[in-house]
Length: 398
Image 1: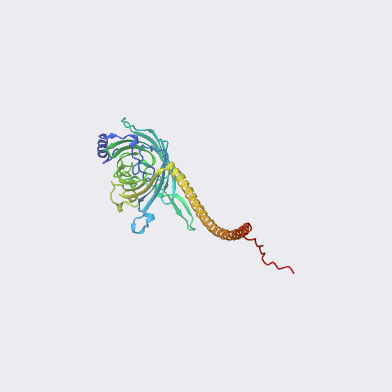
Image 2: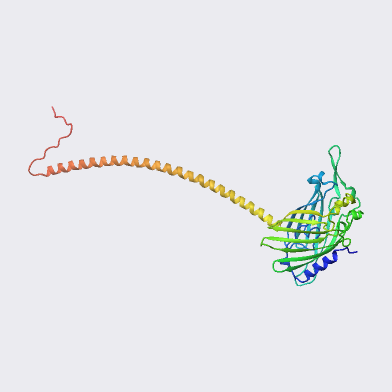
């Protein structure tokens, strides 16, 4: 049976989307990560797998859930329940990932297969089937606090099922979902999602109104919508609204170059806490604030980036080696040039000495030639007999 609020929301959102043009697949905006399980809206999945094989989403989220009756006695770790999810998309048809629940943490897998892909000129939506909470955690609730860790007197720890979660059977939770996307103006896109699931989407663990007082449309039925707009070329704002099978949620996600920050309000229909209805009732049935911080990229791009950074590192190391080699060779050249200047200076001094010796020898030869020429002229003169040249240091005979 449908509960109040669902029909007006569905009619209004459906009328809005029906007036818009279908969105070509190549122009679809990537969906952000949900609070706990891969891509989608706030908590629900969408029938969508990234057109880029190897796309990756890593997101950490936190939901404020006081576990005790008095907030003043609780520390930050007790009042904020954190989760981490890693989602990967492959071959434009399959997504697979894992979630780490709460601060313990526990681990479970999730995934989806895209059976039908929407087309811009066709009326049919995209259709997917998927699963959540596949693992050893059979008694998880929708906040993922069904399993906890206990400590003994010796400081040892062991996992156990929380007392309130004994009745849950949510391993795994199977769902089917359909999503239709539209263009809105020239700078935005919108989509509408409708789906049905088991386990986490409809199992209340026999807790009745303590688990969900109001907000459920019909058991297992979930729906929601998104409006995405680009304020700048590298930024995107996603405005999200949904019913996750239990509660009405709304939020906004701001994305910039793969980084995302989300702020959400969940259990909007519940309002404030009601202390008179008990502690368990006030865990699930009042409006809560949620935040998320995420990063998305492509595994192959990361790999190419790692290879490129490695190559850049190798080139930088080679440049450093070449610079060091050049400096060493420049020092060696300077040393050799200095030695050459010394050698040239020594050679010039030796050449000058040899030149002086040669010049002296030449001068002696020229003087000898001059004396010989004078003697020859004297011998050739007819006027007087030539005198016998006197030899230097010659003694007369006795």
